[in-house]
Length: 578
Image (tube, rainbow, N blue to C red):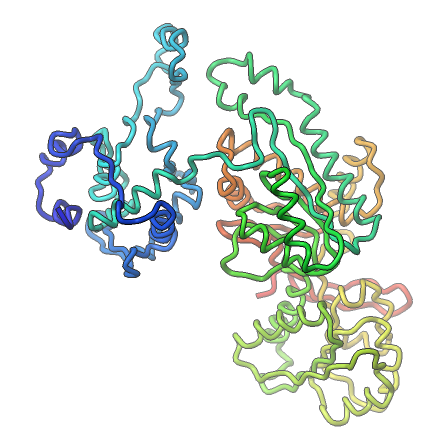
């Protein structure tokens, strides 16, 4: 019966559908299986169908929506609505039901209905004494492989009901359907490592070179969240065993939290092996926070390879990727300052397209990230490439260097991605040269020591600033301080502690909403679907979330400096730079 799906869709009358769905024409217990493929290969091909809308042949899947509108399967992939976990989503008033193996293979309860546990005869017999609201019948029976295939082909579920017409009806050959059904049967079936009947285990990663104060600021705040959750202030464990039957699912989902500390020592090329050993010795459900003075690449790649969610690590050097999925960062770090500089200059009215832009930098992680952020954004605007002047290691920018730069390059815009010490001789150009219209600095490279920028430059100086400005979030900062004081945690580094406070606040909501569905992809999706935050975060004006978005802070200010030894920041742009 090659091509059974397309044939049925085109030719069989509706009454035959009912026969098929009730098992008269096809045995309901028959399993669809891609027998010529290994399980791993079937899962790989099924994942590509589910996530990308691509058939095993490499061609796009074909489907119909709203009854008669043909669509390319890449336009409406399964995970657009059902999510990567297969556990569904909500968008306004539209509820997308789960399509993972565990949920498909059991009946779908109506809202409010209660099904006693299988095998619990006493509770099953007691059901007849419940109010009618809790005795309603299931919305549909469990799917078999055949009825699932029929639903995907025709849009009719095992109860004979039509599925919402926005759900694509797929034009799939039998073998391709078997691959997709096989994938769905195995999607989000086995609970993730790091969770047992009583505990969810997390870990945080700290690398060599982290200052002790930063280490303690992060750990003490993170542990305070763990301790608060475990305090049993709502008698969660007692409720799990003796709560009312209609709240069983919610109460029995409660687990204590445990935090391991993974400290990476020695050369960076040994870190993958250390992470592997930590994980083999004690698997964890997710990584929380973490801190590194350098690149986060090793931990990022470990998370991707092992599909471990990593939530809000403290790093200036996140991995910038449009496809990696398992690490959620506060921002793009220093890269974002370079990106902001490009967007700001492109929008500036006094900077013509042909303006000469000169970038002076010293080789290093920070300047490399800034240059990448700037150049990748700048190229999108099809503007002329800037002139790059790289300082050699150990070389000091002399008065002659600054004079020659001004004389030979004649910059309209001068971008100084340098530290404060590198500005010691820049006053040699004062009075002799017309200053560039804009001189751009990075807050991070200045180490937030804005007094290093000489007064004579400040009328033309603009600084990228990735945090809230003084006075914007005082109430939120006070809230964090009070929270720490109540838990007897010393206030040591409020920026670090505010970030970890926010992580814990979001973590509580995400764990609550996954209920007992301890799947890592579902856990990350709960962050994706959270409302934008401007309440609990004290160091950013706003953090925004959305499906697959992995950088929560999407903005950066451009500011100018008042004159004097203690300059104030004067906002010159909105938060989100377009």
